[in-house]
Length: 123
Length: 110
Image (cartoon, rainbow over all chains, first blue to last red; front, side):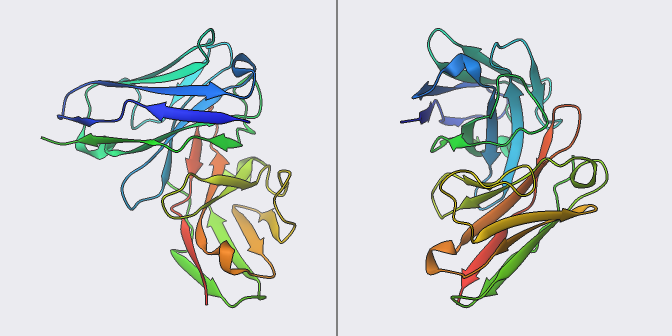
């Protein structure tokens, strides 16, 4: 059974940093690109970042570029999102999701999702 | 990276059909056949229901279908059931290895 479990979401002050984790099981982690998607309270989904299966390619939404870094540890089946210079508008539930192939490709549909972890940025 | 445009809400009675539109530009929806749709029930994670414009993942009922014309993609749900009441989001590849979601549509089954 495929499982994705996010963790690390907490209340953090503006300007602070946070690292989210996504522990994966049920599939060969290194064979698939992985994505982070966020959802502000009561709002829609927003694509955040994607990383290839080997970790060599990573891409970001303009809204987080330069502040967030996606990474993965294939030996531990874990995906990460390092979030720096946090702003109030980064407040959201952050989901990790599995992409259909190892490479980052246009057909980047997301077939499995975690339950999300809430990040609140407030003073 | 502007969000794709979806109607805020749609509704239909059990057994009827509804269609949800998703309008973008030639840089996203119109430029690629890489539109996906997700269903999200309150408090739950999104679920993939359509990918590559019109393909259905295993286990998704054939009541769900997708299509695209120009810069607008559409999700049609036929034979509406009570459990279809949820939020629906479209997503499109936007080039340069980025993706954009729609604002979401709340489906109410009357």
